Image 1 (cartoon, rainbow, N blue to C red):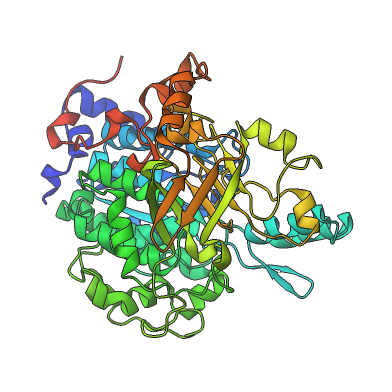
Image 2 (image 1 turned 120 degrees about the vertical axis):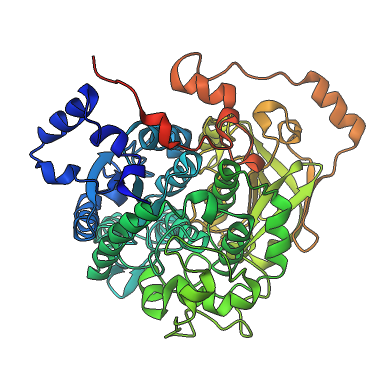
Amino acid sequence: MTAQQLRSRNWFGRKDLDGFAHRSWTKSEGFSEAVFDGRPTIGIANSWSELTTCNAHLRQVAEAVKRGVWSAGGFPLEFPTVSLGEVLMKPTAMLFRNLMAMDVEECIRAYPLDAVVLLSGCDKTTPAMLMGAASADVPAVMVTGGPMLKGKWREQELGSGTDLWRLWAERRAERLTEEEFCEAEACMSRSNGHCMVMGTASTMASMAEALGMTLTGNAAIPAVDARRYALAEMSGRRAVEMALAGGPKPSQVLTPAAFDNAIRVDMAIAGSTNAIIHLVAIAGRAGVPLPLSRFDELSRTTPFILNVSPSGKYLMEDFFYAGGIPAVMKNLLPLLHGDALTVSGKTIAEQVRGAACYNEDVIRPLDLPIAGEGGTVILKGNLCPDGAVLKQSAASAHLLTHRGRAVVFEDHADLHARIDDPSLAVDETSVLVLKRVGPKGAPGMPEWGAAPIPAKLLRKGVKDLVRISDARMSGTSYGTVVLHVAPEAAVGGPLALVQNGDEIELDVPRRTLTLRVRDEELARRRAAWTPRPPHYTRGYGKLFLDHVLQANEGVDFDFLRGKTPVRFEDSAGPSHA
Ligand code: FES
């Protein structure tokens, strides 16, 4: 592509009133005339925020990207995006993923950018940026912030979230003192970066790499490792090349083959259940049909090979030293579409050809897997006609086929009011059912699915129960937890009709979830069911409630699916007062 064809020339190359304005106001930042010599303008979309703890170092990462852009002859301009911090943002960062995706898409469209580098980290920031970039379809390369160093407390290694849930259960069972609990708090999160188990952030970084949207090796490099900054610099250089070449664009990378590859990797690494929702949403933007059945098809034929918490014993730092995603993809290559294109301009097969595994207890060979099937399964049945999700790799083997009586909680407040009530009629065979925590119900589909085990059962040594809800679950969580039940209870899905004492059967080998109540009785309950009033009647909350899709459709907004690619000629015309 010549300089005259660069989109940014419509702003900076004009010899008229608008060109004067665009250059003059940009010079107010101290740039010289030299940056308007026809070089590509590279946007750096930065989700840095001190409120998004996992992304708090992204300004340093942006500096490394800029170094790469300048050294390759580009003009870097960093801009902020909405940022979503999983821990501090209430009621849930998921409520705002689509808002962030709109922000990213519209900024790419509105500004003079020839290519973008997407800086993400915490759970929702990665899919939101990929969704926005896919809809805008300007050449884009992603750099994620990387995982924290592993937690260290006394003789134990601590994994983000996963060990917090475990320590909290120990505290509630009074096997851990308050002093010990406080001491562990300071030892778990000890560097910049996102959660360092295979939680949602690590999974989505892995998905970005498997989809081909990052340079190879990106996902597992620790946030504070010098090599993350080197990769950021290389990504800036690559963005300049992509701008000059006019691609590859997301539409050339995010193909059906790329999504198959990502699902294979997700199953092999026992990724977060959240990846299913986000991949469906990203595919929806790219125009790639991705029914839940595709996840189950590929799960059945993809061995689970990564021994990383919460489904295994190691942490992300160990995964990086063992070879990271390139080593996983090299092992999986016989199952992958090796010819899928990546943002590097090379295919997946070319990218991972030189990869090596340095620890076969962390990354198992294909013929010596941890389990023969992938980490996540899709369930169907009269309780979830449009599907539900369960992470079998983090579940208890003895509960994978189970029949039990429902103990029903009508909403999250009800759960917390009664879960530790000594008079609650619950035992180790019970099935906890939590309603109204889905996309419209909570709203925002929070990570409330791993309902706590009642304290009286914890004290008896019970560590897991079958739990069912229309919520999501943190990627750092574990247990026999059925999630994403669709349609959700708040819109009158069958989950809304479950009553205390109903028998529920979970059969993971057969992929079924069955409410053992006669159809006539369910019809009677349905006729008596009424929806609750909406949580929001104005603002973004109302937009969310009016347009959000169900879990099996990716929880995107109905009007955001698909793309409106940015066009060269869109950028002409006056914009100043
Ligand atoms: Fe940000 Fe876990 S809280 S990745």
